[in-house]
Length: 437
Image (cartoon, rainbow, N blue to C red; front, side, top):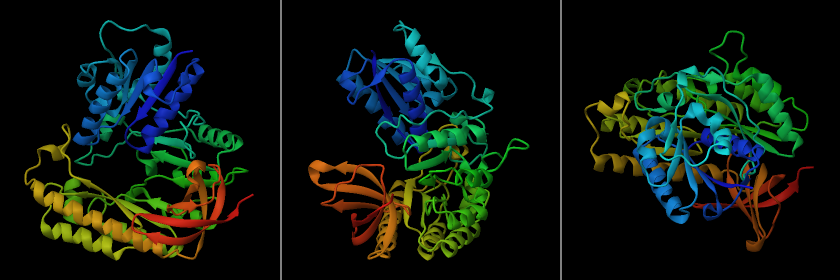
């Protein structure tokens, strides 16, 4: 039986795509191995959001080829869509699959021998009209399966390459999503994460298609469902009815990730982000009022072209004033094929690095303050891993606090209640107070 190894870069959508590839390979009588050195096929599912992510992919491919020179290396994902020729030129690469060809990957691997020259398979993205729902049961060892509701993006943020490598926005059929979630529940998964490239646009392009909040109302009624968690939703498509549903539903994780990017309206306009900082502020405060224990995170982009010190201070002031639990901080990275790549007024590298570090320090402060608020309190959580040999377990609370439970080992995928005992800058320590039946 041929063996495969998958290495995934990038976002949760990529992780869901890797799970779909994994499921397809299993169906074609292949088995997964835990080390690339044992594999007949090595699949690298790539990200291309920044130059750094491209560099990491290339380094990984070279390292994997050195580790196993007899394996066939197959590259898929967003970098494969953006620049297939560059990847095909790397030593050891056998095939390159664009994002619209992902469905064909298991079939082609099962039927084709090794090509004389690297094979590039890249159907047009604009031919895609629907987001298929694949079985997510083969999670690659992860506790929480990802169900992708939506793919592609029709926004045109001036810095973002994603619409060009993911194609137009498209949604999965509600009945397919509900069937998959029921199947995952039947298999015993306790937490399911709902993801998409532009999740808030779910169902909005097709007349008569239900929207995200309507789908969520159906999902929370599924018998036996332990917990659902949402991945990132853009502020312009975050409906307040989602928050109200989460507040009254016992199965909804109190965790929301809402990208800000900048607290300056001037910079938001240059980014082509169709909202103002005031909308973000009002949304975060509404969530906090409705669900006071909610963990709310955001993305911030430092050093966008033309960002002045005043613009940056506006961002800092907004973040400081809001009850955020953490920040994901990214330095601006010019991406060929985007409008921002050719924008003048680049922020000097030294200034960009300084601003990034200030935001990272603010994120650490926010995280410490948020976690400290729950010392002595009991929170719902899921066990992520059992570290029997090291005598501790790791849990993730509903509001997105990762915590260590010392001297207590519980298998992964168990819903529990934990009491937050101690909070340090780099870790949270908890105690399991109850296992949920």
